[in-house]
Image (cartoon, rainbow, N blue to C red; front, side):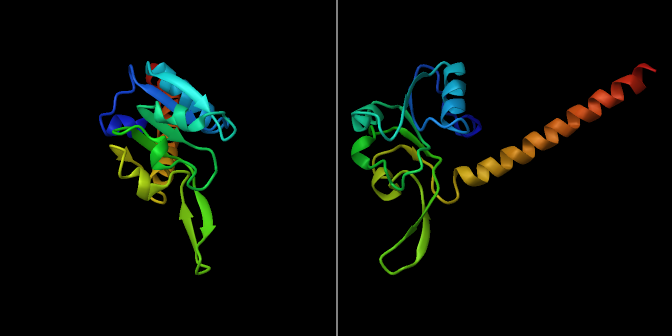
Length: 151
């Protein structure tokens, strides 16, 4: 949600499709999008007609754990695509590399906005973890300081 905010992408009134139903990513992001007044559809790797559902999204968030599952034909032109997946694959030369749940090359030709893997959501997750840790600590300090100020 912070990423959407940083890029001025307002989910209000948008159709958001979340591919992935995990308790760590899929369900929480779906609830946050609902709270931001998006219309949300939750899908997963076994959803019938997944391509058509994904193609209907103004905002597509993919966190399903399947390397390069989402291809260009599954994305509405001009959509915002956030790839949360991170998968290690071996290329034909035997070299390992990281890829997301979205085929970056093909989807990049269609989407208005696309997060890379690696380098997209991963660093954002670390940043938000640190942000929340500092915020939590500052709240503890504030709570401890109140009795001193009153005293």
